[in-house]
Length: 456
Picture: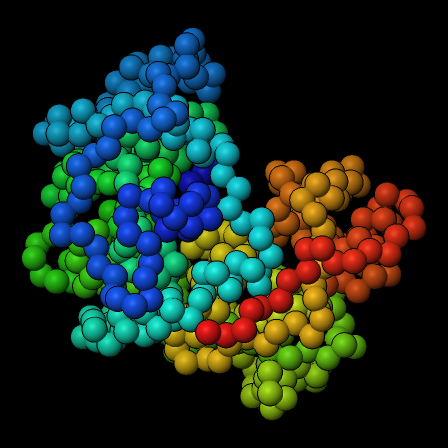
């Protein structure tokens, strides 16, 4: 089992509500551009087990040597006591520490980030969400100013995560957190990680920040308006409104201060530096340099012919940056600065992290990104999976063969593009797939071609 890190492995409740089901499936109101969004005054009562709820597997989980769930839970409680959790907190939490197979099914079945960047960004970084972020910054100006002074994180960066994760508190999830955590802890996919997260949730109860009944969130066990894992909540949540509790479900001030603290100290934000900036790239760019693992000073990118979108020159300085092409050389282009690492650490999906960084620039006043000059074709899902399978046969580690082109797959694509003398922009194309199949590429239309819709 891999060691737990700060990296997020799943999206927040609002993203799941929007991308994994119809809007009416959410127990909370959908985003409405015409009115401000606020969290409910008190959390709803814990709902009954979901439609997929079922007892723990007979015979016990294999990763726990066949141990029954009850025995596993007893051992987990002993670990919690050893970690400093009181018997009082355990007694309060025990009714919620039950197994739900439906939670495990959701975790195994998530497939959220299969869209191309322009589709995802058009939906999630929409104009109304930018406007709501700007309005939140005005409404909570004192808390944002304090957070920027103390932690060095700009208001737009905090507001973008706030909007993407829960639509500013409107969609925090509607499932009991303890049940989600302990179910995922018993499952074998990420058992060690969720054992630690369960203990962290018990510590939050013990500290008096939230009661077990208040712990309502996403199926993945995230809490609050910026969807913190319990370990992040315990370590980085702050009492910014001075009421003696760290409440990221109902206190906007606590949400702002806690999110800034996590970004600054958990994700190592660099005060006063940018994070993402749209640019224009020339057609003769050495495409193999477009990689998040490659950094050049801005003066070097200027030598390569990279400019601002309007053609103006970049600053001729030594600030390091990577060139990010989320859809290859025909799609949008960005300079990703060292602070962009905070986004990829918050959520390791490149589509999500780029969208979050882009939305923050929009809230901060940047214009909409340039539309692709021509439609950008995307391979259909079955061909993306086939390409990943061919890359695995060629000796590459692409992670899970799931049709979603994560960083490992993109790196492998780039290497094969270089081998075949293709533009090495890390974007999977029909030509690359044909080369790897060993057959000529057939001309095709771009059924998955996408471009940004007109700005609203």
